[in-house]
Image (cartoon, one colour):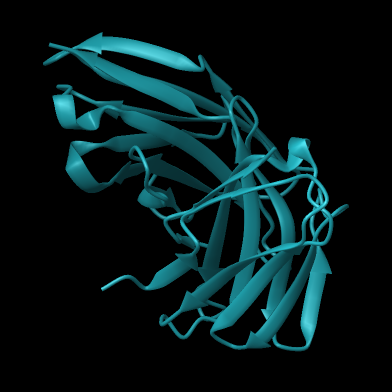
Length: 114
Length: 114
């Protein structure tokens, strides 16, 4: 069975500081990995995805994530936080092949302090 | 131009009432999903459908039913609403052509059961 663990339900950073949101996964087969963002009163939208090509994945709005198989991690980073980055972020995992069930993490709310 | 729409966006109802949440999509995707989001629990899958004749239970289907009226429409019903069904509900779609299960979300329906 696949699972995702997001460390820290709330993260606060100062504007201009590094953003680091942690995600660890468990999967019995090679995974696909995703980060989604949810702005207030909106649905989730895809930030970036890992589909077994490059291990460093770049997404929208300056975010990137690195797939580390040895650490079973897919942490999300951004060098400099902007006020508009305040949102909830969800890590998700799906199996390659078959039904490709997607399992979401419990989310991390990012607060950006001016 | 919203690709995945949900109606209503907000609904307040009473215990025991029947309620239907509707989802429409213009993305041409075969797969559609219903999730509920609760604080601290992330997204949990209620039902999913791979096409009009293929409907499957997710991890928390008790108390819910669905109908796939057409490729573009997927509705979720609560036959007799109860307070612990108060949550944010999301419809999502995905494409069978892609090798990975990237999901596209509607804006959500906030349901309150009194």
